[in-house]
Length: 154
Image (cartoon, rainbow, N blue to C red; front, side):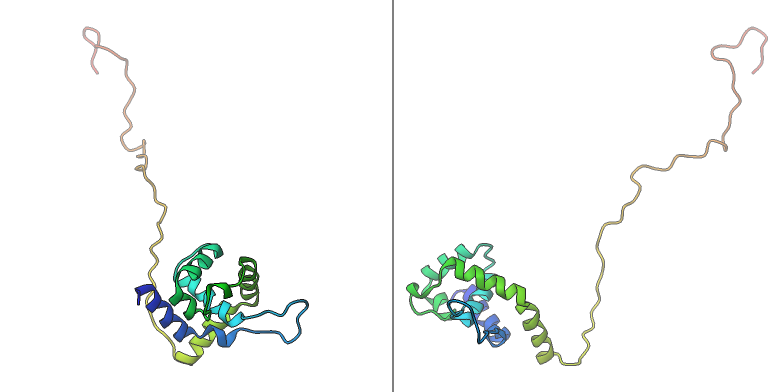
């Protein structure tokens, strides 16, 4: 298996997104089908760092291993782009990512406190030019320009 597929399988095994997908019992119109498989595809889109849903669909159509991991046997079973977009918007609105993250923390960390050091590496705005010196320190008396006249002392 390729590295990305291994990473996807490990992530899906660790995260178990499909356990947290809510499928309502009452739905207007056609019922939401295969939300658990779409949730697996949602994780695959993140792991593969795909920005467009169209890219995910193309990847699912060309890769039979990825398609099976996401719960589809044949390329004809892949939902339309609008179904994916609608489901992804629903996941985002319901806060699926937050729910899964919270469940992971409760399951693996419990009440344990994780200590780490955070260092701020943001830039500090500083002065680029040196400060002007005080003029009162070296105040010189004004004198005429040019050479002094014969017998004149300066």
